[in-house]
Image 1 (cartoon, one colour):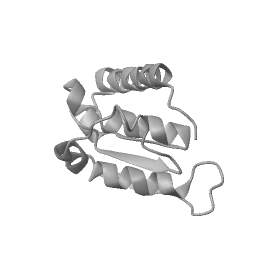
Image 2 (image 1 turned 60 degrees about the horizontal axis):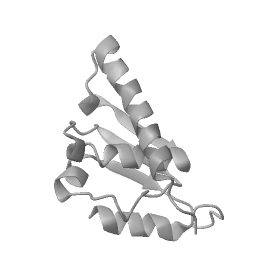
Image 3 (image 1 turned 60 degrees about the vertical axis):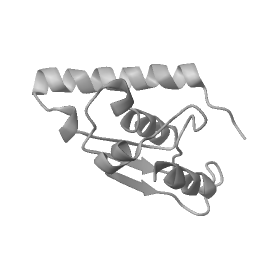
Image 4 (image 1 turned 135 degrees about the vertical axis):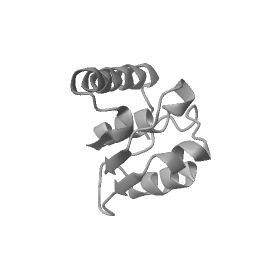
Length: 113
């Protein structure tokens, strides 16, 4: 089992959200109309950003796409029901992924409910 890099993941979330804020300013597209997503580690980052926004006083994204990813920082990360209800999620994961275990998806789904 690997451990989450708390500081690295928080830094990456800030970098992602800086890009979202740039899109909001320059293109006039609010975060509530933007879908974030990724594959593997990028998916974990998208999940962390999407499902912790309300806790940080930010409006939810339009949605989140997770391909072969996981829900990071499960011990520190709290998701309230409103947040998971407000952010649609598409999460796909292959049963035979030998890097990110399929059980990670099931664990994350239970945590988000």
